[in-house]
Length: 304
Image (cartoon, rainbow, N blue to C red):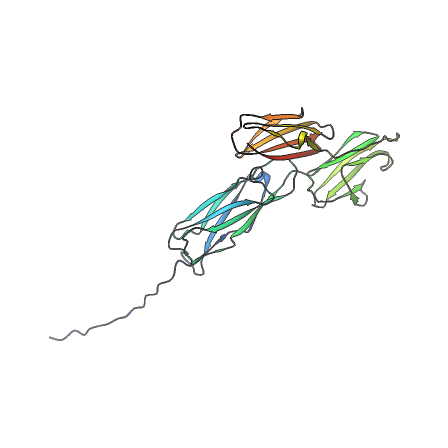
């Protein structure tokens, strides 16, 4: 009987490290308008090799932190635990943005991505910090008011720190300020117009009329809200504010913000109170406006 020759074969098994990966914010700067209502922030998993970047489940944390944006009045704070299952590469969180009608500068808040306790050391964090820029989308608008002898031009929606240039009747642009008071001394009599351009790129054109009558004395102090005693009266369950404005106004609205909700009251009388409040932190906003063209805002944080 013939013997059967033995056949020996060898094979090489290569075990790849499938727990080496990078976790990062998908973007380091997100932009959203107030009217957008929310912004979606995403965290992405990457790997030097193709295919499944992580063969086991893991967890990271994502949270927000105030910069000049306020988590009580401008956006809803987030403290999220993001769970990645094996081979998952993306997780997203939606952050609510608060819309209001108050002209104010663009504001931002920070995003921080952190390791969870016990996270495999071969999983590294890159681009672990970022920010969200909230773009104020209240329109830049200038309007004229007053009497023909004295016309007052006021502008709203202009960002603090920005400058203005004016062009009268299609003439050359030059530096100017608003509010501005126009009489026949500084503007020719008749029907006129002024184009006002902000350094942010926004602009508004206003038509007005000047008579040949002698101008009257005009002084336009800034519109401000002044609280009696400098702050609201706070008790165990209520907030009350008494205030005056430096000039007559068309109306005043008061908002008390808490838990992403607004209580709103008309407070044109110069007094407002909110009662039956639970313990916590609240933000009182007093918004005074004059003929929808000139406004002032007071924002006060109170703790019950």
